[in-house]
Amino acid sequence: MRKKRKKDKELQLAKFTQYLASGFSRIEIMELMGLEANEFDSLYGKFYEGIEREVQDKTTLRLYAEYCAKKGKLIRDLESLKVALQSANWKNGQAYVAAVRTQSEILDMMIKTGQELNIVEQRPQEVLLVDGVDARELDSEDLEEAVLEELKEAQEAAGQFSKKAKGKVLALYPQKD
Image (cartoon, rainbow, N blue to C red; front, side, top):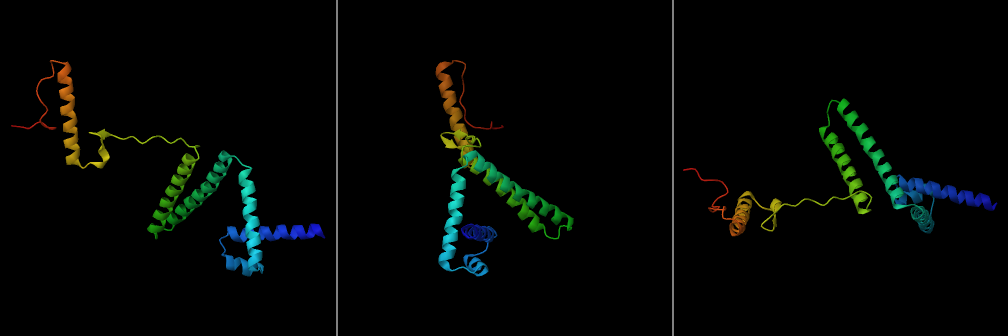
């Protein structure tokens, strides 16, 4: 009798997990399973206890691999959707663009998560400093001015060590007469 009760509770938790994973709301699950609020809360707690145990038993690499596998399935599903949309004579171009964008976002999430977990190498961003400022933040006029200032400073420094450095940098682009 005790084994039957245990099996019934396991089946109830499995059904609860299925409904929860399918996106049903608390109220929907309670109605479908005939649960009271305290019964729902108890199953909800058991559901997350199981997940915590499972997560604690796995390495970071294994969890990330499982995460990527699940995201990979989403990407394949989106690829199938794109093919179906193409064969529908492009009647809904917005849906196709949304599928492409979603695929890109999923890939970005996978890379970012891997970097945060120190599984995927994160390369430092290249920054071009001109006059101590990130050149990407300057408009073209300010960039020209900063480069010209850098050239003048370089010429002054070269003039202190070499007699060959003659003349002065007056403009970034030579003026035509």
